[in-house]
Length: 331
Image 1 (cartoon, one colour):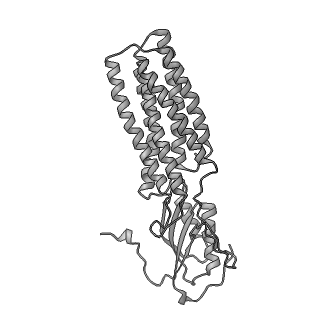
Image 2: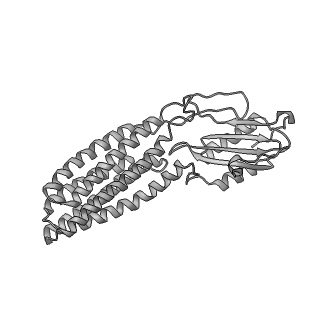
Image 3: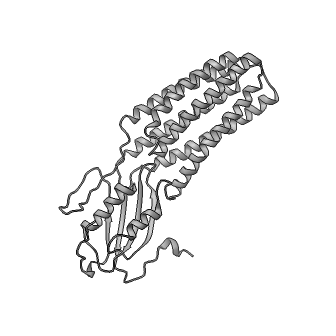
């Protein structure tokens, strides 16, 4: 990064913002003020959600009907789990749509944070469904009933195909978006669960051990809780404005501290605007004076491109007064 001639000390403080609006401005200097809001989800994501919701609703209906006919708690458990997944997919889909809305005077960051709330609600919904499945499974273990193993195997295999295909649809966007990752994990877990239920159907068919069915339901719940716990934990942390797990705070602080002319960095805060976008603020002490807009814009651009800080706000200070963070001076 090129060092610019410092401005006079009368300039005091300056804020540099990467506002991320859908338009861009070129102010004619090296750094430029580039403002982009990257709210648009991956192309065709709406169709992916629509297809996954439709297929899973079909599976819920089939599993629910045959779960009652075959007296299978494993099928009913899978149907209940798939129903919660449909609701979760609808929440995630709604969050994707809301995330595309432009910022407003009231919601100046837009509505991208709805994806965090959707992920949190998704995890809570799954855990609630798990409690109901556990109760039903325990009752069936205490009072076993005959189970139609062949019906369980056929319906569970159908669920395996549908859930596996749905998981594949979400695989591409699951790496960079917690909201989509939640949908992917649900579908992938459903595919594994359906495979386990299909196996239990075969065991019952050839051995007549009906107690395998409610036992497999408890195994299903264990898998769901294990996968959901991490999702819920990450969503809760983001909702509490914690540093996103993908962000390396020491690395960002080192980058800012190593910039020529920066004597100190303080009040560095990072939080999630959505499951795909991050924001940060930092105070840079530059005793030689403000280095110019182009210099600061270059820092903001590097933070966006190399450190995933989609909305960075930098305050340049001369270090002539003590600036204490209000959050750190609470009594």
